Amino acid sequence: MPTTRTTTPRLSSRALNRAALARQHLLERSDAAVRDTVAHLGGLQAQEPQEPFAALWSRLRGFDPAELSDLLTARRVVRIHLMRGTVHLMTAADALAWRPRHQAMLRQRMLGVARRELAGIDLDALAAAARAELAGGATRTTGEIGRALAHRWPGPDPRTLGQTAVALVPMVQVPPRGLWRGTGPARYALLPTWLGREHVVAHASGDADGADSVGRALVRRYLAAFGPAATADLRAWCGLAGLPAAVAAVRDELVAFRDDRGRELLDLPDAPRPDPDTPAPVRYLPAFDNAILGYDDRSRIIDTRHRWLSVAGKRAVLVDGRVAATWTVDAGTVTVTPLRRFTRAERGAVAEEGRELVGFLSGGKRRRVRVSASPR
Image (cartoon, rainbow, N blue to C red; front, top):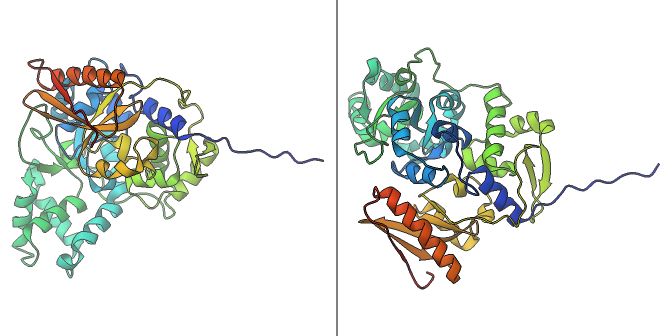
């Protein structure tokens, strides 16, 4: 009998770009609720407290920033150190479910930074002391936590002790930090106490090979928001090393493709993969947006020579679905600095979307956009 050979379908960089934009609600604004969008995206990068508002404005039709603030004060979404050890805006349910799965990674990352300072310190004892400092619903800054711990462990810098406590103990940053146009230091509370879930066990979960239910959920949720993607992309997004078994456990549910480099990409069968020629509107992304950072191979959305922008805190403008400029805002004026030459139509579209953005950011008071003439 002759054998039938099957080939894995290939997806071009442009096809991957359009798929990513569709999953990220950047191809067309969504009517979804704010909380549902935060959940769908697997959280929003939020180390800069006001950036999630711009992220949601670019993704949701008629976004009202008060809705996100209300979710924070109602404790339905939280600010928490999670993926890659950075602050993310997460739904309360995801924070509770995912934080234990990230525990080992957060601990190792902290040790990678401060192993010498922490040498000889019983980290379990330090974590217990930090929990005691936050008992009863107390809130503390990392400086306050560190100074309290320094009475028992006087060797390390108190700032290091405070940061280590945040890595070891599930905590959230509490309002007013993160509220719309709100200010305030990063004050921390115990995650289960803040959410009224004191029975939650704050340590790593999952079986030995990593193929736990949370790991499998992470794979599915990542692909829903970022796929098609390689396992290296998944790891770059979450920072976890122990997911190969989780990927293997759900592999029969997935479909496979290859990219232009020949890498295997996995995806959910029914997830959107638009026609590569689908028009992509201008979109303004905030600093550290996961639409860029959520991949190991970011070439689907940003040129390799501009990759450094994604980790330098530069806000990006997407033109035809790709990073084509950076933007800043000051005193009611958005300034756009192109990374390549724009056509007249592109300049007009960038300016028009920029006027809408500055109107949102400034409450409609001023709508000035300046697009620099020459690419940087």
